[in-house]
Image (tube, rainbow, N blue to C red; front, side, top):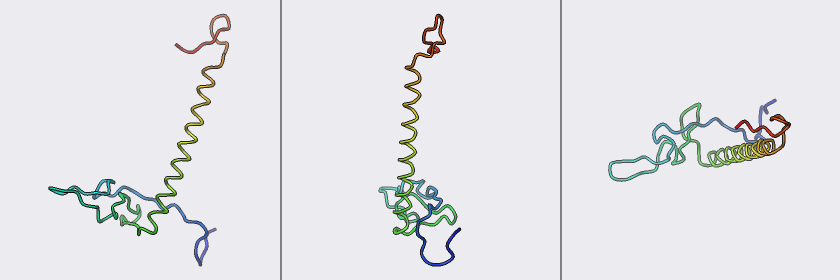
Length: 104
């Protein structure tokens, strides 16, 4: 149940998308030089609902939450990869005469 008044106890992850003007780079290439993208505050990310840049006070926590989520996902993927390697190295007794079958 969402709170109806007062400050939220936790920040919610807002949907973000890449800035369409700078294509997520945070910088726009002009004829002779590059300038910071003014539409996304040089972050490369805008609000998915409105397409406008988030204020810097809100953008930093949003990017931090996304970074933590991606790091946790990467860590889970790395841990899952080790299980497949262990299974490959185990003797599965499916080959001829009860030897290890590796599928080669």
